[in-house]
Image (cartoon, rainbow, N blue to C red):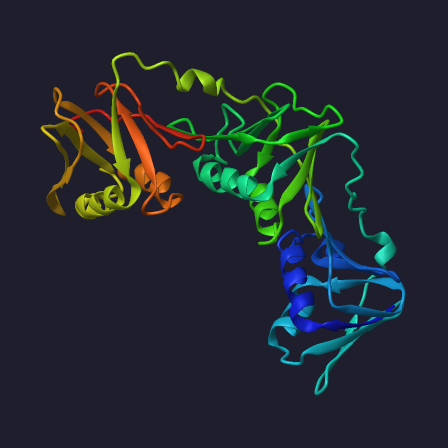
Length: 371
């Protein structure tokens, strides 16, 4: 194999593939990225045996077809530290030589034929989802997952795809994030029940693989794995094993709840102020909605106390509840400062429901008042 390539383009693709490779795996071969060069394309492949990626590299001239293994650590450093615009890579059975205008590296190489296969996207049944929607679904749900859960399979995001309905849910048992949107089913594709739980790490990789100019992505669930195809990548991952809780019970019909219109930026600002005196043990903010004002207070023995007010459009009977400020800020971080949302509150023992007009809902379980 012999290729000439644009260093920055290869480095970008290599970095993405390298996030899958296992740098300290007892299986030495998994510490490498496989490169295959054909007349019409160059593909990088990496896997940790739980997930894998195939990524096409642009800006490559193939002089001789072939394949090789590139050590993720050493070759990654070469691509980052080298300043040449173009590099040549030539691989034989035992070594790989990387040359620049003023540099040359001769590296030992393993047999590429022993590298595990990384599946391509060859599905006839899949869902086509707008790329922007998929990115939002990931960003707005992945932070609410819990990789340490033992009772339920909460270490990933549940994906439900049925016809045009596209839905993602993340929860850790104390808060829940749900994002809905519209996609297109091709070949009758749909997910079954509540078993399509994509690991958070793999989902983050999928989100990063989507280019800024991508219009749509293809995703297919089969057996115990999921595959995603973008313009240049195919990513597969095994699904999280186990059962997902009945999340719909957490978002019930809310009779008697008060709905208050809010803006993300100002609400985020007062939460940051009020939480200055909160510590890791007392993370709760006491909130009181009444007389056109939201009053936020916090108090700790060592750090002092805070009292911050925010004008709101509510003049009804006073409603008090206590919420973990970290869960509130997690929700607000994924919204634009000028984004509008509603906050539904009922009593001090009922969860708060925050939602936007574009299909995003977020539930936070309350903390006990006075604690």
